[in-house]
Length: 201
Image (cartoon, rainbow, N blue to C red; front, side, top):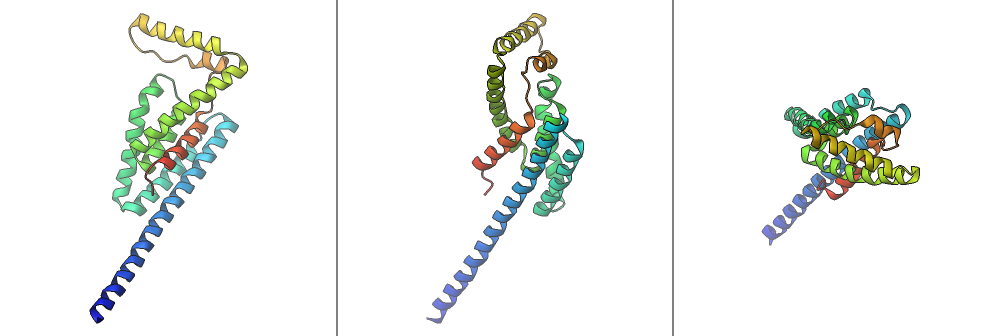
């Protein structure tokens, strides 16, 4: 009888401790999401206002990311962050060389890679590509430049085939015809979608 009561009390205490640990972890994930979301919103606002990604905001994102990783995993967390940052940058570097995306966009995604890992940032990138494509298409339809952009894309592919290698995409022509967007906004939306559909909790 006493043993049964003791075991029930022990199980009750153990359940409370487990619930507290789960609640703490969940709260940490939410706080982490809020912090990186604030950084991304600041980057988007600066991009729209100044037309570029602020390196200071990238630095803040890196410092906070390292701090969060170290809080989660100790000193090893710094290496995890650096691995995610560098790994993401390497995976997306080709897009920068081809001038399809700016260095600022790659750095933002690299910061996300440091915070959440390479697979998370690449998934975010894929979401952002689809969202950006839809936004660009709507923008071209509104400005009636769809024909011009299709012709430009066809010319780009033809030139690549003619020389036998992939060349840098003509971004200046794209800007002139309204075919470019502030991709940081799409990254923010892609992040929220990735976080929502991920296994953060």
